[in-house]
Each structure stands twice: as C-alpha cells, then as structure tokens.
Image 1 (spheres, helix red, strand yellow):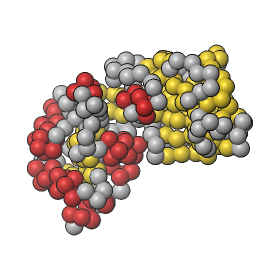
Image 2 (spheres, rainbow, N blue to C red):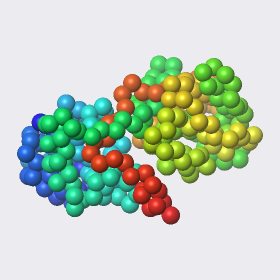
Image 3 (cartoon, one colour):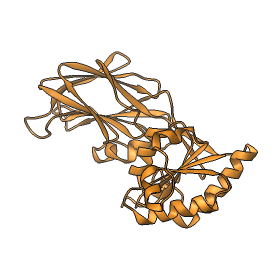
Image 4 (tube, rainbow, N blue to C red):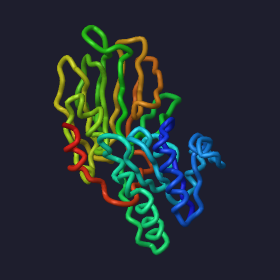
Length: 270
C-alpha cells in the first residue's frame, strides 16, 4: 500500500500533521516536495503521487482542489484545516487514525469511496484541466457596460443569450462555492446534475440544472477577448468570437474515507 500526502504550503500545522500521519501509517508514504523540505526528508512531485493507492490532502478546500487536479482519479482523503471544509471531512485530531483505518480497508477490500463528477472546458486548440467545482466563462471586466455577449446552448438547443458578465457551470460539489455567490442553487452531492448560472445578465434566465451527460456550449462575442477559468486556479484567454464547450470529464474525483457531511458543512456558511 502506497500513501501520498499533500499538505498546505507555508502552514506549520499542516506539515506537522503530515509528519504524524507518515509516522503512524503502516505503509510506504510519499510526501509532496514542499512539505518534505520542511520536514527534511525526501519529497515527491505532486503529479507523481497519482501512482499512489491513496492520497491525503491536508489544508482547506483549495489544497484539496490542487491535489485533486494533479492526482485524480486516485482516491483522496481530505483533512480539514480550514473553516467550511465541504471536501475535507476529517478533523486534524482524527487524521492519523482515519488514514490508518482506511489503509486497512483498502487492504481487505472494504474501502469507502464516493465518486464526484468533474467538468472540463474545451475550445479551439486548448483544453483546461478538469474542474472539481466549476468552470466560469468571463468577460475581461465585470460591471455595467462591460462583460460579453453570450449564447448558451444545451445539447445544441438554445437556452439563453445576451449581455452578461459571464456564465458559470458548476458541479454538485461546486454548487456551494462560486455558484452560490452568483445566486445559483445548492445541489446535494448525490444529485447527478450540472448547474448553468448566468452572471449579472441583462436579460437573465433562471439557473438551469442539466444532466451530467449534457454538453453545454457557450458562444462568446462582443469583446476583444474573454477568459475561461477552472476552479479559480487555471485559466485560458480566448479571442472572440468563439465557442467554449463544457462536458463531464473522463475521470471523477474519488473521495475515500468517511462520507461527505453536506448538511454539517452548510451550517458553517452562516
């Protein structure tokens, strides 16, 4: 059994917890290079941790998203050092024991894994990494008189069009993030749907839930350029007019260990 660990950068608590998990886990353990340098041990590039049987993310949702982008579909356990922790359900005090227990479950064939769909944006000559939360298609500037002209189609059928700051397409997991701040609905993780939410559209349509197998095409025009952003971390500048196609990514994110506590995490939003 090979376990990888990705800890939040510049966080001594995360590094110390990575060291504790390493010492208490009866397995081969590899630690990301940045954390390993703090612990004065050999490190492994995060992308190479995809060959592990299980990866532990220590930090907030941002650390989890970073780890997921690099190692999916390798199963992940999220240890929560943040405030909300929709993706990180294991507390620091229980982290080492939870990882030990989950390693044993992998060994005896009773591992617990929940698959979360990802979404991917593709354009003319480019493809963004899969997103756990959302993909946003944005004008270069927001606000009155800015934005872009958009046309949104679902499986080829016109849903909406007009002037807007942009369009957001989120996964169920991402419904609690950027989607929620733009007025989109909460979606329980077990509901198989993506949500299309227009951002400050002049003549807006309500947010729309579509099948995970649907293909959403966004035609962008009316500005010199726009941006496509995945999970707020990776972006592509696009020249307009052009089409952006969004569809379910080939690989899901696999959450190992205790099930996601959706309603508990919601209580922390207030």
